[in-house]
Amino acid sequence: MSKTLEIKDLSYRKNSKKILERVNLSLEAGQIVALLGANGAGKTSLMRVIAGVAKHYQGQVSVCRESDEDARKQYLAMTDNLAYFRDSVKIKDVAAFYQGVYPDFDQEQFEQILEFMNLNQDEKLGALSKGMKEKLIIALTFARRAKLYLLDEPFSGIDLMSRKKIVKSLLLWKPEDATLVISDHVLGEVATIIDEVVLVKNHSVLEQRSADEIREQNESLEEWYEGFYEGEE
Ligand SMILES: Nc1ncnc2c1ncn2[C@@H]1O[C@H](COP(=O)(O)OP(=O)(O)OP(=O)(O)O)[C@@H](O)[C@H]1O
Image (cartoon, rainbow, N blue to C red; front, side, top):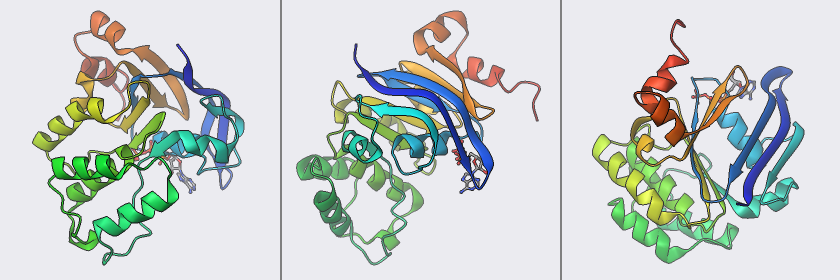
């Protein structure tokens, strides 16, 4: 199996504050991975470093064997918070922007996912609820044909029934050999589709385990995960 992501001895500080320390992580092509950890553990920072958005780190990060920050961006799609678009911008304008920036953006796939999400291209961003905006962000991310998808807490505002439907569909939207990393502080519905769990704690990757192995040795993935926080406030 080829490696999609390889991280060796990654340390990252921001404003002289320790954010990530000696992180080692290796993910194979095609895997679906839950990146779990409490608030402030470093999940977003880790994704931002992988995506080449957060710079000036120490250690090695490579995506599809490419370690250059700009070069590895061509292989990955990360959820975007759309913060730099005004409320008056329509969904179709955001899609046009994506098409201009990302050569792998597939308009047909985007429209299909948008329809699945019950979203209309003529809707303005300012008229979308939190959950609707998250649905749009997922559609924009999976409209790209990437090797590595990074979804940073993608479902926090999405209602339970939609979440279940979306989680099942992620398997259809991602190319078979693409690796998918989903961060969250809870396991939730993704527990049904993940191959691997990566636990971030104390600024580093504390555990990387196969989901099947955890299921065999514990009552459930949830019980295993909660065990890491027992006795803590
Ligand atoms: N720009 C910054 N300057 C200083 N510290 C920062 C900055 N961005 C993040 N941090 C700190 O880095 C740590 C990790 O934050 P990060 O957002 O990566 O955590 P997270 O695991 O994604 O949390 P959450 O689940 O709450 O989203 C936190 O202690 C946070 O305060």
